[in-house]
Image 1 (cartoon, rainbow, N blue to C red):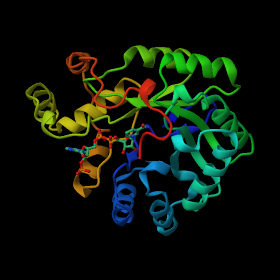
Image 2 (image 1 turned 120 degrees about the vertical axis):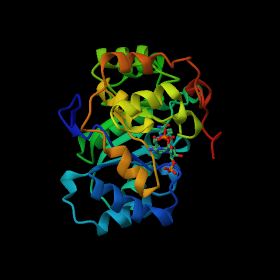
Image 3 (image 1 turned 180 degrees about the vertical axis):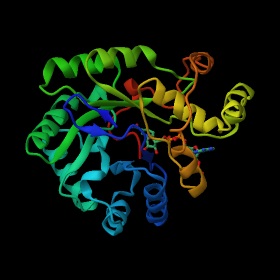
Image 4 (image 1 turned 90 degrees about the horizontal axis):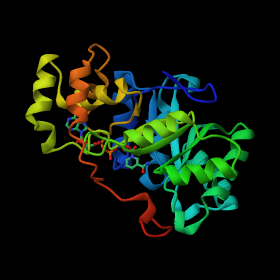
Length: 275
Ligand SMILES: NC(=O)c1ccc[n+]([C@@H]2O[C@H](COP(=O)([O-])OP(=O)(O)OC[C@H]3O[C@@H](n4cnc5c(N)ncnc54)[C@H](OP(=O)(O)O)[C@@H]3O)[C@@H](O)[C@H]2O)c1
């Protein structure tokens, strides 16, 4: 567990469910819960909040043990729109409160993220959200947010993997009490997980490259939310609490950094341009 800046605890390893079809959510959730996951990361944009709500209803775990994150979609930025979108997500998820609610993208050109965040502060004060935060905020977005709002975000969820290792942003966030959550922590898997350097590190511990990368995130103080819809890989990704990377291993993985984003630059995302 990681303690956020408002003393709320969040599991450091959760399951991301972007691109998981509604039809697969129940199976995926059951496998994840069985494997030990208690945190699930979804978003309005993922179109699986309803299915997650139904699946959560069926499992036999105390609500307080679970940590459910969802996100305010770009198209709903603005004070009133945020309150409405939040209530819609709450209903879809069949919950009475959400553990963490995040602004999905800053959409800086639209200049609505301050109002949006103020609505989230209100919902937080009403007890409907346990922790509020943001995604894809660069330092200059955070500077503005911190200057113009009251509650310091608990989390900034950003693209973070060995190729695009945002250490400076992490250091800045940590100096403000904001935790980094790494999205696309495995850089969406695929061929690059066969990298021989990763394989060599993984072999030393009888682990996989994916497990090594997840551990790299955890040992460097990031919350991490790898996505998988494959039962075996869901289990594999959680089986990372019985080994420790050395400083040399961490440095080798750090050296993969090329500073190349694999996904969109947050400054360029505008309301309405992602469907
Ligand atoms: N806030 C944001 O803007 C934002 C943006 C993107 C993502 N996210 C969140 O972050 C989560 C994770 O990011 P992501 O889904 O983009 O990418 P990711 O977790 O880096 O990678 C997921 C991909 O890797 C594969 N994979 C997973 N475990 C594996 C393993 N052990 N070995 C080999 N391949 C493996 C998965 O395939 P299988 O499913 O077939 O296993 C899937 O194709 C998302 O689900 C979402 O919750 C947030």
